[in-house]
Structure formats: C-alpha cells, structure tokens
Length: 593
Image (cartoon, rainbow, N blue to C red; front, top):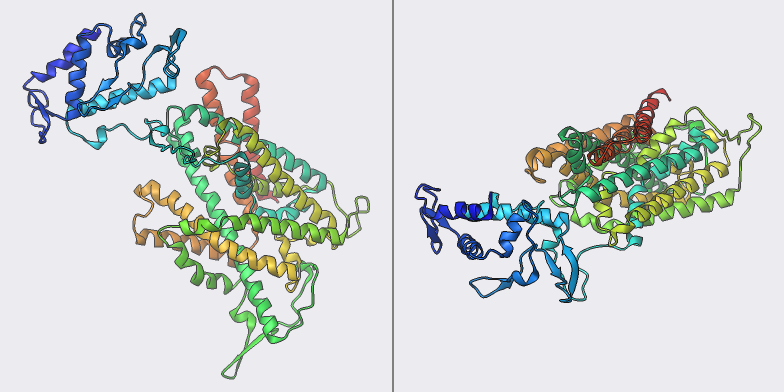
C-alpha cells in the first residue's frame, strides 16, 4: 500500500458516520464524525494531512522507507513539529546526512540503530491506537517494556542520579552476596573431599559457575535491547518458554528457603551459646576453658549442670533451654513479628554487617591457624593428623560449592547497575576469584592447622571451639545480631517470589502473609530440632538449585540464543550437554554419601 493510499484510508474516518459509533466524547475535544478525538488525535490528523500535501515530507519518507528503500530524506526536509502550545520537539527517529550535534555534513546515509528504530516503530503503533480510538485508555498506552529506560531518567548537571555503581562496588557486592553460611562449612567440606581433590574441585566448579553466569549476562545484553528483563526467570521465559520461567522461580524459592533453614539453625546455635555464656558468668561457673575440642567424642557426664530453682523445684537448665528443643521455639517470639512487617527496607541498612562479619571470621580463623601451626601428615595413615588427598565423599564439597558460588538468580540485577557495562565480564571474574580464594584460604588453613584428628572438624567450624572461648563468643554474638537483620530480608524475598506470581501483588493481605510465614518458619523450626546439620542442608539445597539454576537453565538459554543466530556446532553442543550432566550427577551423588 502506497503512502497516499494509507493517508486516504486514515483520513476517511473523519466522514464515516458509522466508525466508532457510541464512543463517549469528552469536553474540549475535537469531534470527527461520531468519534471524540483527544487533542493529540486531532493534532496527529492535522499533521498527517499537512505532510500528505508535501511529497518530500519526513513522515512520508519514514512510512515508506521500509517498503521501497529508494527515497532519501535530508535534514533540511525535516521541520520540527510545533504544538498548539508553542512548544517545539524533534521527531523521535529520523535519517540524516548532517551531524545534528555539530551541524557538519556527513558522508553517506546515516541510519538509526536497529534497536532504537524498533522502539520507535512500536511507539508509533501504540500512539496511533491511542489517538484513533479517542479514548485515553491506559491499555492503549505504550507498555513499560517498550519505552527505553532512558525516557524515565532525570539528569541533573553535575549530579549522578542514575544510581550506577563503580566496578569496585560491584565486585564487592557480588563477593558479599555469595559469601555466607557456606564459609562456616568449608573446612568440613574440604575434609570430606580430601586436600588435593577439594582444592581442584573448588577451581573447577568456580570456573563452571563463572562461565554459566557470564552466559546469562551475554544473552541478557542482547535480549534486553528490545525486551525489558528484570531477572533470570524472565530471561528463561523469553528464551525457553513459560515452563522454564516457572522452573527457575520454583528453584529460586527453594534456594532462598534453604538459606532460611540454615539461618534458623545457626541462630538457634548462637542464641543458645550466648545465653549459656551469660548464665555461666552470672552463676560463677569457671569460664577459663578455651581452645578447641572434638564434639563427637564428648559425653555428658553430669546432665544436671546448671539448675534453676523456683518454688522449691529444681529444674535442669537443659529442660527449659535446649539447643535442639526449646531455643528454636523461643526464636519465634523474637523473629515472627519482624518477618510480618509490610516493608523490609529498614533491614537493608544493616547489609554492611555481612561484610564485617565475614572479615571478622576470616581474620579470627586465620589468626587461630597461625597460633596452631601446621598439623598435617600425608604418609602415615594411622596418624590422627593424617590428611588424605582424595576421598570418595567429595560430592559433599561440590554440593556446598553449588550454593556457595550461586549468584545466578541475582546476577542480572547486580550487573545491570554497573556503571561501565563493558566491564561486566571482568568485574564478575574478579569477584569469583575473590570468593574462591576466600573459600580456599579458610578451608585449607583450618584443615591443615586443626590440632585434633581431622574427622573431628564440624560442619560449623565455630562448634569446634569451647563455649567460653573469647573470640568464639564474640563471633557468635555478632553473627546472631547480623543474621536477625538478614532473616527478615530472606523472608521478604520468599514473600515476593511466592505471593506475587499468584496475586500479582507483593502484599495481597495480612492473612496470606501470615499463612506463608507460619508455614516457612514451621519448616525452619522442624529442621532446627530434628535435622540441625547445616552441612547436609547446604549440600542438598545447593546441589538441587545448582543443577537447575547453574548447570541447566543457563546452558539451555545460551544454546537457544545461539540457535536463533545460526546453527550450533556439535562441539559446543556436546560440551554444554556435559555441563548439564555434571549438574545432574552432582545432585544424584548427594544421596550416596
């Protein structure tokens, strides 16, 4: 259809008495036949007729450029549009042979960026729907995912308002997000794998996690040019279909739920030991015992240590204050009101405590290792300090690493806020290097220096220190308060992930929030009482979520993106299938340890 035919067809609506009959006409609007057109619609029709009379108009050239490709528009033919209010604006997109910034002529035809052109075509489509209907319905407005993000940015001279962060902040944001409870289990996980096998697996799994995270960013950088993508599940839905988006959401919820369970177990541990320490100090119990011990070899010689006397009754302390009985229930009184707050913004102010706690643990453990020295034997199997280089229980380490190196569901959010997007690959690589180095330093140093038999190492390294040890007490108190500020954020993430897809609302009502939080905390309490082994919880949840969100979906998203641009080579296909097989095997191996 030629330009003149399109103009004639669109102009016929003015005199067609049957077109859009019955639509309401608002005051102050021009009337065309039986259609009430907004002022924008009248302005658009007026401009259309004006440009229709000019065969060299910019609008005509823009309409026909995709069909014929023969017409050429020069900058002198593009007049700025003057609105009735006297304002002046330029067209969103136009071709030019003149540098509009400097006014100097350019050689050859200058075409708009294909992405910007696609945005403009959509903008024209939605605007014409809005103007021709004459009713300013929100459903006919251009959707948010079509308008470029720069449309909504406010630029102030000399003031950075975009919220972008530097590379150093981005690197430590990734480091702080990945480092967590897995750090406390790393010496135990390394002991499960053997020294050489463990260090080798740390390097291999870290490289695989970095590779799949980079592939996510790579596909996102291409697809986000035309589609608004907020998180990894959106990208899965775009590239693979609705099933992949649902699967990514489910396993993201499971990852956060696993973190909530581990936090509840650790908070019960830290609260129990803190109150025990305060009770011993208040009752005059000898608190000079420091150092390390082997909890698995300790038997309770006197179960009535610590008695409470009230009204003639002698009550053992453990009956009302037990780490695996009552303390997980006491936590409900303190934390349940916090997790039901409508907004968790207040708790984000304490995010820096996470970095401080990690540095405190790192420095205190390395200081203890320096005091102990090296206690390692590699040849005498009968020695209590014997360190094997390889053990068949190595999947414990791979499961824990899958959670300790997991950032994939948040990598888009973090890296899209990086000031220089071209440095995303470099910054993420540096962050993964720092995380892996931290895990290796803590795991290897504690494993080599631990002065007792290596099978005494606990899945929470703080459990190997006596309860009256000064640094350990300080660490547990600090970590308890830090975790109480993070736990409401974890519950808020669960609330958003579960309730928003169902109700399309983060706060659908207090009863639904109470129901969800009650169910989640009930699960946490059950684990803290009957299964308080954070190593087992981390390795199972890490292997399950890693199988899906680290080793499978990112690979499938990458292959789908490659297939759209051309055939995938057999070599690439086989390598990526092996990555998926590794993730599945890692999960299955957790059941045979």
